[in-house]
Amino acid sequence: MKSLKLIKSLIILFCLLFLSQSQGRSIDIDTDITDFGSGNISIKEMRRNMRRRMSGMRRNFRRQYRGHFTPREEYYIGRTISAWLLSKYEAYQDGERGESDLEIYINSIGRTLAMASNRPETFKGYRFIILDSESINAYAVPGGMIFITMGLLDKVENEDELAGVLAHEVAHIELGHPTRAIARARRQGMIDSIVGEDEDTEANAAFKALLKDVRKNVLRGFNRKQEKQADLRAVDILIKAGYSPHGLSKVLRRLKNGGGVHGNPRLRARDVDRKIAEKSHVPELNEKRTERFEDHFYEDDDADDYGDDDGGGGYFD
Amino acid sequence: MLNKVILIIMILLFTGLLSAGRSSVKYLYVTNTIARVHKKPTCYSPVVGLLKFAAPVQVLKSDKYWVYVLTPKKNKGYISKVSLIDGRTMKRQATDEDGDEFREGLKGFSEDDEITAGAKGFSEEDEITAGTKGFSEEDEVTAGTKGFSKLEAHQKQLHRNYRYDLVDIYEKKGAVLNPHTRFKDFRKSGELGEYK
Picture 1: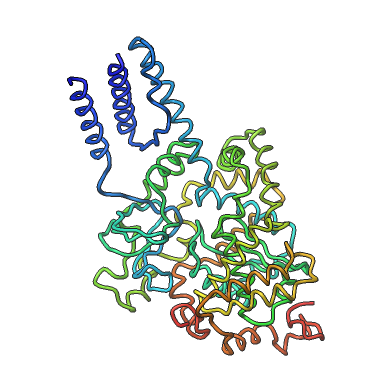
Picture 2 (picture 1 turned 180 degrees about the horizontal axis):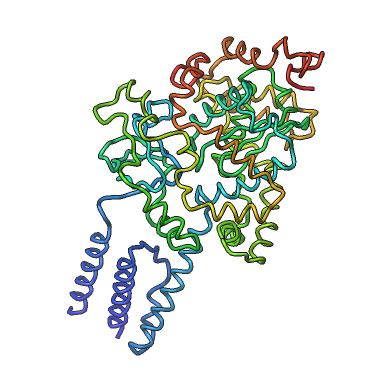
């Protein structure tokens, strides 16, 4: 009797595997199949049980992989967040006027850093956009759009420091922080409402509500743990790219009185320094890079148009 | 005794089926609008080919961040793992609500959508020409988004005050087909990347 149960169980297992293979999917069978064999049940009941189990597994499977955003889904979330940011803040230069030297310069640094990250490519690639705002902040939007304010640019004194700020934002993208905070259970509704073509007002309302989650993260900054993770990851990215990671800790120390920084910047700078101390080789500050930074930020001819007199940076008030 | 024999036969059948089910050739698909095929497993190495969205590649070997692939045109190189998606997720997208759009992307792929700079061996000259034969920087923005106009229109209708127009402009003007070549001089003058 006992062996009969065992054989029954094996037959069911065999059938389940056959079904899963025939559907071209590999399903992790984590249910307790041996339960099937308990008691004397008819073939009809066995089939019914099996069907129920299969549909349950399929449901779990769908739920499991649906919990993650694909790059394309991330892009469409980010696209809406970016469109919202650009309606809230004025961009440094009207997008239609072509790329300015400053935009090209910042994109060159950002792209060089992205190439050193473990996520060198996103659905449509990285973009670094300057916002004409005095607040001290930078925003990493899902999909790879990174916004940096004039206020924050005003706080950096050389290219390595600027790279430190951008590397921190690239690290957020690499680590998936912008979308990670969205509750897993709410993700599918969000995806449906993003990619849904119909005028489903319920889905649209859900999307608007859920969009707030992402906006909150992007605007207010991520939690302390995520900020620390991004700081530490930024050190690796900077070293790999050839920038001095000390630039990041210097900017953080300078921002100690700034309002837009998440977490205590002095403590964050200390963590960064500790991480740097663990490294056997750290690139030094480079004169050539500092020179080209000054070429972009301290142009005498434009000083009257953009700058102030306290040496705080040519382009900014 | 008979039961034991049956049990052994069943186990053998089970393991046999399990191994038969596993395909020895593994394919992944490009999930970004453009995937760059590099000579070495680093973005600071020359781009030897470009693949558009939904292009299938055969996996030859892989590590944590890079996959060594055989492209549809039988060229070999490294693609960042984040640019590739497995067939299961590809199927999922093809059966979702937006399946039509995704299928359109799949149908759209042909071998002509791949450009190879290093078909006759990798050289710097080939690298420089990558991106000029058949591909344009527009492709970085448009590839993989064929058929998505409905979706974008829907998003715009949903958030009428949002500046999607500026997003489009920034995407277009910031498009870089081959970052390795485009920013090479920048890296060289700043002693960065491969010049550090």
